[in-house]
Structures are given as structure tokens and as C-alpha cells.
Amino acid sequence: MSKGPNSRLADLFALTGWSKGELARLVNRRGAAMGQQQLSTDTSRVRRWIEQGEIPRDPVPRVLAAVFTERLGRVVTTEDLGLERHRPTRTGTVAASASEQPWEPDRTAAVLTEFTGMDLMLNRRGLVGAGAALAAGTVIADNLHDWLTGGDVAHAADRPGPRQVITQGGPRPVVDVYDAGPVGSEEVTALERSVEVFRAWDASRGGGLQRKAVVGQLNEVGGLLTHRHQPALERRLWTVAANLAVLAGWMSHDVGLEPTAQRYFVIAAQAAKEADDRPRAGEAISRAARQMLHLGRADDALELMQLARASAGERAQPRTRAMLHTVEAWAQASLGRSEATRQVLGEAEELFVQEPREAPPSWMQLFNEAELHGMQALVYRTLAEHDPGAARLAEHHARKAIELRAGKGRERSALLDRITLASVYWISGEPDAALVQAKLALAAISQTSSLRTWDRMREMYRLAGRYQGLPAVAELREEITAALPGRRLAV
Image 1 (cartoon, rainbow, N blue to C red):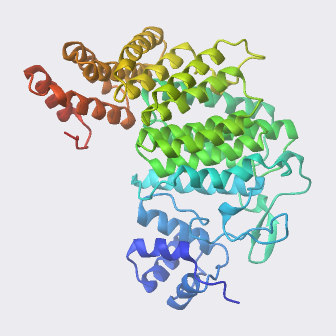
Image 2 (image 1 turned 90 degrees about the vertical axis):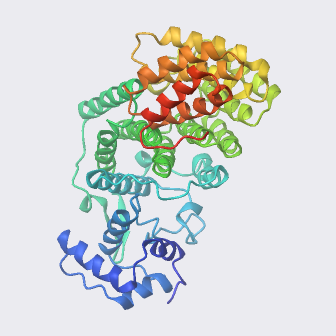
């Protein structure tokens, strides 16, 4: 019986510019290259997939995902194509869309592995285009809310029986799909250590040079999670997956792969819940909010921060809640809300100095005093464009952050602080001081692989335009234009 048109597949098909016959030939060709010589797709089958919602047998959905990924230059999964088969929900009805029902652990592991695999394929072929619109904050929040807050969804480690995926012929064990096998405590410890190495590198030099390594490691962890492990070990694996997914998302954001970054943040939040670590889920969502703020979407960021704080809940330590407050304050500052900004930042300061109940988790150890000052500087610098009185506070915090980061392997963060400080001086009418900081930032920026840092430099360039009549400022702007990596600057 016809299910009706597959709008997801139809929309992506329209973007490719292919005919139905071309797609059929590409599927057969790619399938043969993948060792699936038996595929005999034709135009009529493609028409049924698009117009009648027919879902082809495995491995055709995976072949289609690979073909679309290569064509569009961004990760396209079988779920994006509307070709996933889903179990009934707890009420006994089948969800119309994957985003309308809570994710189960099996599906989380499968999506994680498929998405990272497609991402790695793009890396190998040198395709890095964004190619898709970001979802609004409200859309992400709606899609995640029930999944993150539903208390009656069992964790993977608590559910009996072998894991399965749904195929045309019915359920089958996931072990038939992936090669990786179960691991022991020592292997998980090694994975945990690798996260620390990747995190330190990202903090120092930016995400560009190590992103593929992180995605590859996450892909392997996804394969491991398709096998049964002891509950404690399995939760540790889900924690590793959450930490790696956050890093993959942040590194993707750092190099301008925005839709890819957003998907990793969602995967990270879902993995954190499987690890029964709601504060980690909240922090992952806050990363998506910071991404929205970087892209000028403060309203969406506030929607996400409401979900992040609700997800973190009372189990979040004071320092975690302080960090969440600084992101919310940045959103308020972006909207020009001076009173709300100052109030939320004040609460962040109070939370930060509270005595922790226990040692902070590894993913919060980078949010130290220097990072607090750095976020305060960014927030007050943002607010200063609406409320000039915030400029002096931004200057104080930026200088303190730079001082505290010196020699600590946080070169990228210190560079962002330096750009913030220069921007403050442009705003407050001190071009000589701004020139000093801007030249220091420009001298250091080539040492990172962070396009996000260049985006901040571009904002500083815009502010410097107020003084472009000064010869030294005009010369600085020419130097920035010459150094910019293949991007145009707004005047």
C-alpha cells in the first residue's frame, strides 16, 4: 500500500539536478563498487521511492546515502532521505518522522556510526561544503525535549536481549552490521585518554587539523556500542561517545561546517543521556546555542539554553551551571538586554565560586577562571554595542583572561580574547590601543586552523571601519584583507 510521497527524498533529489534514470544508474554503479553487483535499480523504482514512499531493501538506502552525500558535498544519512524503518512507539503507533519520537539506544548507535562514516567519506574526497540550512533553535529543542526529559525510556545497559536493527525482512542483530567487537576496561580507559589529547589540541590550535581523527574515533566507538557490554562499561562508552561528538561538533563549527556541527551536538546530547549524564547533555546543547550566537541567531540560542538548563537539572554542579549562565548572558547581550545580561552574569560569578560537591567531570575542567573571564569579556563586549558602559567591564575581563591563559596551551582562546579586547577599544573610541591589540592578534592568527577565529577578526574589522580615515587603521585593514583565508570582508 502506498505511504504517499517521500518529501525528504524528493527535496534532496531536486537539489541534485539528476533525472530519475541518472539516479538509478548511479545507484547501480555505486552498489557495484561497494560489492553489491546484484542491484538492478531502474527509473520506475526511483519513481516509487519518491512518489509512493516505498522503502527499498538493504543495502540500497545506504548506497543512496553515499550517492547523495557525494553529490551534495555534505553528510546525508538514510534518515535524511526518509528511508529509515522505525519501531512502534510506546503508544503502539508508528512515528511519522524520526524526529517525532524518542531515540532508542540502538538507533542512537546506528545514526552515530552512519553519520560519522559519511562524514569521513567527505573528508577523504575533500568535500567540505555546508550545503544545508541550520535548524532553528525551537526545532532542535522540540525534537530533543521528549527524548532528553522522558523518564520511562530505558538506558541501553539496562535493556535485555541482543540489539537489533529493522530491515525489510524483519529485525536482525546489529552484530551482523558492524565489525567492531566488545571491549574491556583497559580499552575504554585508552579511549578516555584519547579524548583528553584531542581536547587539548583543539583548545590550543583549533579544530581543523584533528577533526578527521576525532570523527574516525567516534565512528569506532559507535561500532563498539552496537555490542552488549557490562552496564558500567557501557555507560563509560556512551560518555566517550558524547565527549567525542561534542569535540567533533565544536571542531566542525570551528572550520565552518555548521549543519554538520549541529548534528554532532544533537548526537552528543543523545549519547550523554544513554550514559545517564544529563549535565553532559545540557552542556552539549549549550554548544549548539553558542553556534547560533556566533551566527547571529540570539533568539534561537535562548530557546536552546532553556532546554540546556532544564536538561542539566539539579545534578549539574555549580561550575557547570555557571558555564550555562555565561552562554545565556551572551544571548541576552546580543539582544541588547543590559539588565538581564548583568543579572545572569552575576549569578554565573556566584555559582562559579561555590564549593563543588565532587571533582568536576573531565569535560568541565577547561571551564576555569580564565574561561570565565573570557566569556565575561565576550558578553560585555557584545553588550557594549548597545550599552557603551559595558566596555570597561569587557576590557577588564579580557585582560584578566589573557593573563591567566599565558603559557597554558590555550593559544586559540587567548587569541579570541585579544580580538575581543581590540574590538572593545574600537567601540570605546581608543583607536591607538585597538591597533596594538589588533596587530598582536593578526600576528598570532596564522598559528591556528580556526575559521571561527577569522569570523571574530572580521567583526573586529567591521568595527575598525569607524576609523578607516586614519592611515594606520587603513593599513591594518589592508593587512587583514590580505591575510584572510578566501573570504570577503564586510566594510
